[in-house]
Length: 257
Image (tube, rainbow, N blue to C red; front, side, top):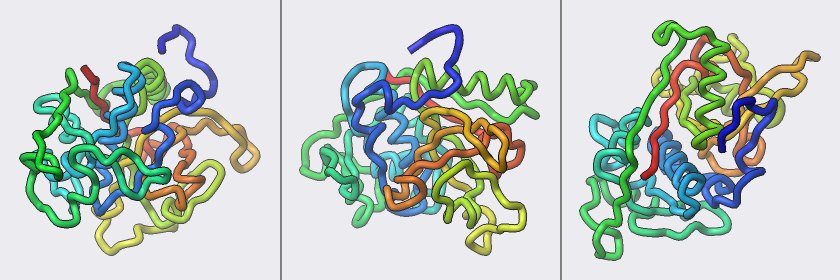
């Protein structure tokens, strides 16, 4: 989808029947980086190629190099895996109605710590590779203004589909339900180690609504903590936050074949 003038509000779910954009995954462990990346691969493959294909969170978790699997990782490494060797299909058993389980479903993670060499049914992996990946860092490293960065992310989402973003998932993020989320600086991480606050989600659109009486632009984001969390698995995060309580400092994506 391409146009010169971007709309004031946008939600990919209004323009497609792609299964992955409707489904909200429930990540298995501390593998948000893999779950968000696999969802984004699925979104983009469907939007660009017109084919529903659920990419495997489990294979991504176990096979992406230099990542910690269930102990955390970086989505750009997941996209490198996708671009270089490909990722097989694999659904999430927690999604309702159930996803096609495919080659390496999420349940593989419960009993396997190695990168799979075959599908769980014994057949050959059905890896499909993308054509490349990219990242967009914060404005201090890109030389962009925040306005330019926001416009660039919007254009990427609008032209090619959802992207992965990172933020610090403070306790007020964990407990957020509706409305625009803005971090309260007095609220800390849920755990003792700040590194465990790092969390990957994906942007699927944007808009604006009232926050404290002021029209506030937001990113429409999908989490992978199930539909019980947030607003049926979704959250609106204020745009233009310069610290890591927002999502305007690291963005990653990949391009399907």
